[in-house]
Image (tube, rainbow over the protein chains, first blue to last red):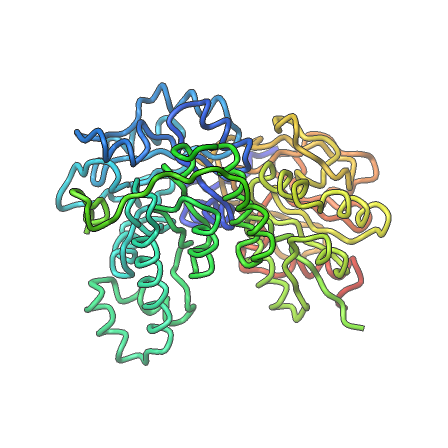
Length: 296
Length: 196
């Protein structure tokens, strides 16, 4: 019997995993115990990182890729996909994460950027990447570099959903407008967005982003998940919102249920009841550091 | 009477399945509740995370109605990847609390090929189709045991990747991502929901 000829690391295979995460919740975890809580609650994946964004914000200092030992510990604990973050432009951290066999890499503004000009060449990797974006132009630049999933940046670690809403509305709004543009206007769209013309043309044809669009940054309640999914996000990332709430296991399960039933207010009443306090949030105007401004 | 095919939409690649079914002119509804399940003539269980789907089926009271529709009503079902795992009668490397619907005698090993870096695509020769079908395997399960009555329609390296048993078809890959409706058509044809 001859071994079947298998292609790995192809765009279809890399984007395929993002398709499987749709309608789900990806949770930030900092140790195997939290990863277990996340999987028990029904998370579709976990994001392994050293500190959740609200602690990164509080503690300051340079924040980097997590300790490989911590990531391996989480991989050994749960059976769902394990993602991990690399600094913007830090392709060596990404190489290490790929060698660790993580399922997805987040080139993330939550960590301290390593390169002020260049993002990682994500086509060079077999592991898929997700990147943050605040608008459609940024999303398309990341896709042109090889990102297989886009998430809104929001403003991580604030428990305040306002920036995520701004970003999702901006991305989805421009996709709708491009859908109505004529051929000649697409050139102007590409120029205004500083994005490759073929990707703009693809949006005009399909009416969708070429890769899945998820939402992240400041989500902290089931209602937040419902809000951004009704606005067009296909899944959600929740960071500090779970493990900085009063009852993480309950909050995690409730957000998972809200992501499935995001269009059903009667079910949302049930899942939103008796959760204790959500994380204490921050007003965006008072922030010293806006993480969403990292990356370009 | 018009027939409706449901797509279990708790989580995962349900929208891609719905798009393929609609391209074949099939009335399609997303199924998240027992009420919606009661109204369909066939059901697709998509890929995604089988652990998450199992929990959501239980928490929203869909698990027992689904079991009953499959076993008592002989509801035709198509399960892909996580859907195959849910339909199996034994799950290996699953969570202890994970439910299986026992729609066919088959053991599925979750993530049997490995993590995402082992995900792959390859052309498959499928019984009933005259040209190869592009198989996309994402953290796919491996089928380790099948009952005698289960028909193997395609294999990769000697392991079944597409199986049929009465009205049940299961694939460890993702026909909904292949831009090719032939497998869905074959299942609908087996179920008498489409002609040709």
